[in-house]
Amino acid sequence: MEGLRASPEVVVLGCAGVDTNVFLPGREVDWSVEANFTENLDTPGQAGVYASRGYAALGRRVAFIGNLGDDPCGDLVRGAFARDGVDVRGVFTDPAGTARSVNVMYPDGRRKNFYDARAASGLQPDPVRCREVMAGARLVHAHLADWARHLLPVARELGLVVACDLQDVVDPEDAYRRDFIRESDILFFSAANHADPAPLIRCFLQDRPGRIVISGMGAKGCALGTRKGIRFFPPGPSDLPVVDTNGAGDSLAVGFLTSHVLEGRPLAESIRRGQLAARHCCSLRGTSEGLIGAQALEALAQASAPEP
Image 1 (cartoon, rainbow, N blue to C red):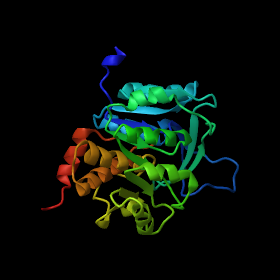
Image 2: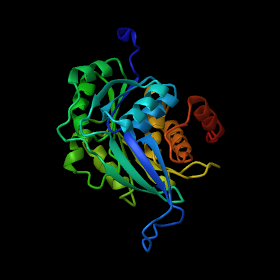
Image 3: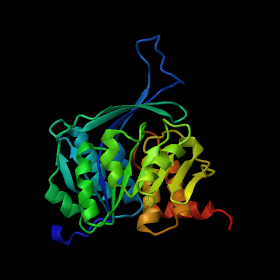
């Protein structure tokens, strides 16, 4: 029956694991005492999980290629993928165990992340199986797992649009990110380390002017760079509380890529839909469950559409 499986529209490459979100009762950690009483919530998380579950919530056929341990944390992620209908043919076993993150969460939704990558740098998935999973897809959405760089030329050979999230990049000449930048048609990055993302956007456009570059700017909105220039988008109005920013950048990327690449919508409309998806994600506390669905996103997009 596996041969009758419909090809995925999008294949997510990269990091999946379990997030432990530690919610502080006050504004900061009280370092004057040994014990702080916090609320600690575990959820399937990290970029690959939020992206895969985000596409599934929007009704897209999605496959995930990535490493998980043969352990309870891996089972937690596999269970979430099974409930969402994510194609896991490309999941391979990591002998070092499932990756973990601890996120210290502040009352305003900010976080301080502590990431235990665990996976050995020499880890490699089965290239034949990965090619089988990607064949017939339209889009690859890659994250920064070391092994993922080797699959990007395969994606290009198969004619897929390649998008990559560079996350909180500091230096555009960072050697680790070089392969991901070179192979990508669409780049996302967080402006957490840059007061003004415009110089970085221009740098990423220099070698490929036809590229699309999007920078998430948190509460300031986001920036879009193309050959036509750089445009800034403020955050849209919302009554939803900001309680947890985990997955917000992934949701921005998923909303944009679904709208622009898979549905063919214009850039500005796709950015706004990505922002709506991210804003919804920020209202989810300590979980990757409940990411925005297609009908809810359509309703919000219609309600918040700018005047002609």
